[in-house]
Length: 629
Image 1 (cartoon, one colour):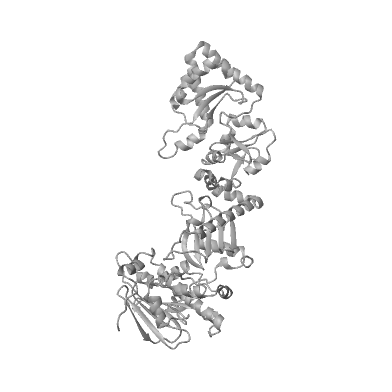
Image 2 (tube, helix red, strand yellow; image 1 turned 120 degrees about the horizontal axis):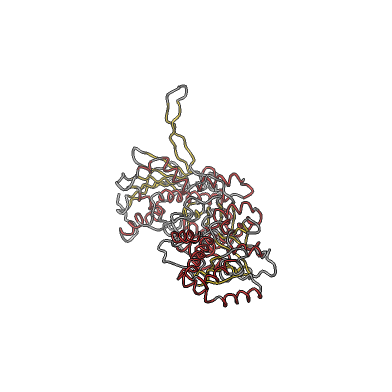
């Protein structure tokens, strides 16, 4: 029998099909099962339109079988089959897709009414079989014909087509699995559990049963210690994906069990979103908000993304493009028949369809989080405790491009409510006289509460937002304002709580004491940018404030980062002009300037301790305290 050459120009093209297009060898089974599903779809479509098939939908099946002794894996279906000419055309020409031609020929209205879903697009999937096999044999018989034909090939050398016998219509593909190499274990494709795993991963929702004869051991009937091997046909796939069912048909328990099984979580999800979008681009989405952060969520190792399906066939396990970074905690999947896939069907062409889906999902997730915040505060606060830092980082990231999307989703601990509140809730409680949103940063709410400035702001009846995450102040500065209200860090020198008379009085005090204050600044060197009297400290003697955009808390955060370049905030040592220490300083300036230097250092160290800032020389502080004692 004469061997025929593939209708491709060179061996290089065939090598590319087998060795370069696909990145995972397991894909071969997905491709062959998808082709079998297409063949069943075609026959089912014709049976509806022409009433020619004697089969009911329940009779359609895809069968897998293993012969370990002869190292063969067989995939068969009872679909439409291929004629001699179709074997030549579809398998003899690389990138010729019978499925694509069939889909193009269907009238759109007929396709809609018959609910036909054809998976194949490019016709190269069949050749992925050569990644794992030395020889591929295809025996096929067209439904309604008595003739069958065999197509056989060992790869780039060509193929043969010859008449043969086949008892029934359909197609049987037999792969002669390669021998193991040092790099590859091909034996696994002759293992029933490996095939079960691959089918479950990639083809679980093919809508025809995928059957495999599974071996199991059981106690022999009538004996107590004799066992026998039993072979039973087992269905490997679920067929109907949960996301294609009507929501009213699915219980909360079913949603939760699917989530835990699919995404390997031991806890139920916090919130489930099941949506169906129809229109120019149609897709199903099943999204979950986890109840806790994965152990690696805030690490470089974490991979975001949703599982992406096309007509129930897994295309990508984690499609990162479907989720923005600020919603990277969402788990779930999208199933869309309108995707433009690349030639291997492993990845996507980056076209507008994917972008539209991603944008719609972002809006949907935001909307669901807003509903959760409004209707189930306890659940939302649990969510925010796990993933709030990611939302705040999303505000800061990319120069604040997403701040309008996220600003109503973030929470901060409130000084007056003693619980997390939103910016909207804070603003709703502001009095007419309050023109700004006050916030303070620190390691804990308890430490922030001890700040002299916090005491001063609360004494005026103003609410403070306590920021305890490193990213908080960066996010707030990126927001700049909320509902036309600006933000004020209570530890900044711009904090304005005084009346006009108090301001004038403080200004005069600083002018009158300028020489002394400059002397103290000189004694402290570059530790501070200035020393000044203030009237905002109530009963406290001293505090450190910052000048400009870089606060003391931001300095601590930036200094803790790798390769920190000595970033320093402009610190101001503020002294309570109404405290007894003020007069003591004035007396020392007149009588003992050397001792005044020590007092300046002590007051600076005291300000550092209150602000949570490290002291450069603790030994010097200890000496000064002992000398004064």
